[in-house]
Length: 279
Ligand SMILES: C[S@@+](CC[C@H](N)C(=O)[O-])C[C@H]1O[C@@H](n2cnc3c(N)ncnc32)[C@H](O)[C@@H]1O
Image 1: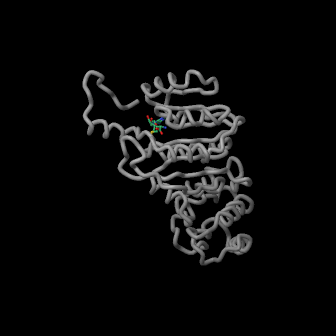
Image 2: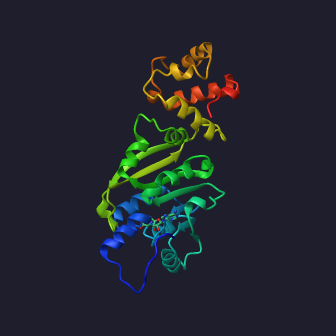
């Protein structure tokens, strides 16, 4: 934990707010939002839920009422102590004290739930939906409103978000006003719902390679796609690949659909020698 408390000296309101912003300790007290996150988790007696940043248990206890197993991770030692005391009677919870970013993910299918510390949203989602995503079935998160808009916008120019979306349906749900938290953060939040596609568009083990491919084509996101494609494919290949993808030469990378991205990427793997793949 980075934040230090001096127990003999009561902290001022301002100091508490700075500390809360720093470690994202904005505790959720809005009953309807809590119920909505638990509902979206769709957790039942056969399911494992991983809760990231469990705090004092606002979501943990309702999750324990429905899920077969809850793994709660929290970095703050005082919160962990309080959480352990509150959940001592439940045999189906494991409280893990530590940093989510370095903990081992469950080795069986699970659902992730979190009122996320906004500052580490991308890092958390990258772990859950990126290279290590195979066991993540769905997720219900509170993220900053602007981030939810960015992650779900129809045109996506961020290669990493695009890679998440190849395998996960991502949807922005209701707004969560900053007044739903104590202390309130500077900005409103939004619920982000994520569900693994029945047929993921990226072959297993190709996440990093796809990110490099997407990063390369998106460098000039607004330009006609055949321009950057020329640096990977031959002219004859471009013709065939664009026909297979039902894409126009003049179409920009920013306007490609997920299916078109999938066709282009698979074509690179199939037709182009590895030394020409973007790194
Ligand atoms: C927004 S609060 C949510 C707390 C609680 N789930 C709730 O809704 O009231 C985020 C929590 O994440 C914890 N946290 C921050 N960074 C973390 C990290 N890297 N790993 C695990 N927990 C972290 C904070 O201590 C805080 O309790």
